Image 1 (spheres, rainbow, N blue to C red):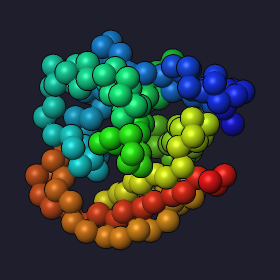
Image 2 (tube, rainbow, N blue to C red):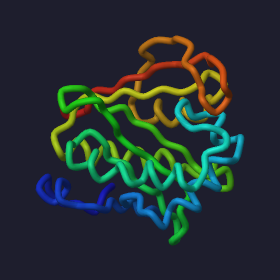
Image 3 (cartoon, rainbow, N blue to C red):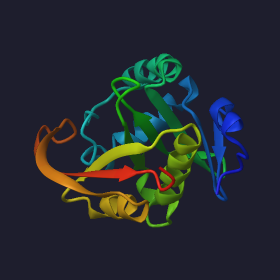
Length: 185
């Protein structure tokens, strides 16, 4: 459950708090920790749009684009903090405001298996729903069933299967698409 109490508060809030986590906007000071985590092959191999050798400068450039995306209501990316440590990122992105948000996420390997991603993505979805969003898409590589379990727990349903180019692997990878309609839609 979020600490936000009303839709107006949800729209203005830069932070989302859960029982264990703080979800906040990414900042330039996050470039080092983000780069270190995504350079781990266990992470970038499961991400379609992250190169295995991403530099801190590239991460900083990505962070710099986030404010403009938030202002357009096309990108809402949040750093995930546990006890003050950045342990992952989750985000909602779309090409335009008439499209559903695509939900993405990754977590540092040392934080896996603790239910943190389900908690973080669930909070992001609740925040988006409080803003009036109703439809969401996501997906995962077939060899990443843990990511699929996160989406299933959050009410996503299978919506198809196609290969997707994975920048982190440099090849096409079997990908499962999933979709969710807000519970109160």
